[in-house]
Image (tube, rainbow, N blue to C red; front, side):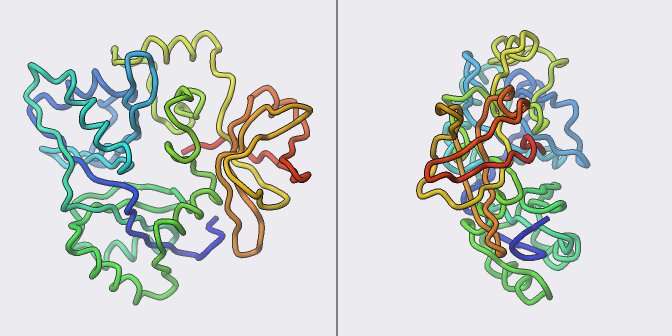
Length: 296
């Protein structure tokens, strides 16, 4: 449920678009990403991650099959690192990979997504389902030069609110959608940041860089913490902030309030603590109710 407006539309300025192509691009990416690229079809985009040899996060991304080339949607802050990392082991592979500054990401969230998509269809180069701030939604890849016109057309549609990137980030927190760079960073292993729940890893595919650590954590019970969607009794004074029982046991990574004044957040917590339903608080006696593990 979206707690801001029934339908949100946003130019996601915090995201950027890459393109990848070449006759063996899929074979190469299969050896680099955590998800199985054989699952990628024009009808089924995939979420995946690229890791260091030590299993640390470099960047996460969404892959869209556009036929002869692949579109990659990733966070702008990690895009350069992602391109450098993917090129690092590409010697001997006929691939082309890079950022496309002329393309942008448009997010549509809510029940009017399909109708709104039809309105700007001539501008769309690629699309994928993406329910980041509502129960249904999509990402559209469009030419940056068309973005202003697309937003103008959509703003004229009934019950559609064109929002800023910051507003969309707040809506994502309320919905329970975590983001790399906001709710976790490279110091936290992706398995402790819900890579399984986000459908971003496959344990049956062949080898990829960082697989050994990732698989060992999965099969040997090394996943001790996860990101959880939570509700708070009040807005904390600063973020991130420690979550306490008798001692600090986790972190509230983000929080936002909806139009009814209800405060929602995302927290990194020990799984065992959540399962035991231990009372959790922040400073100033703010209480936390854990709703569920964050998931796709």
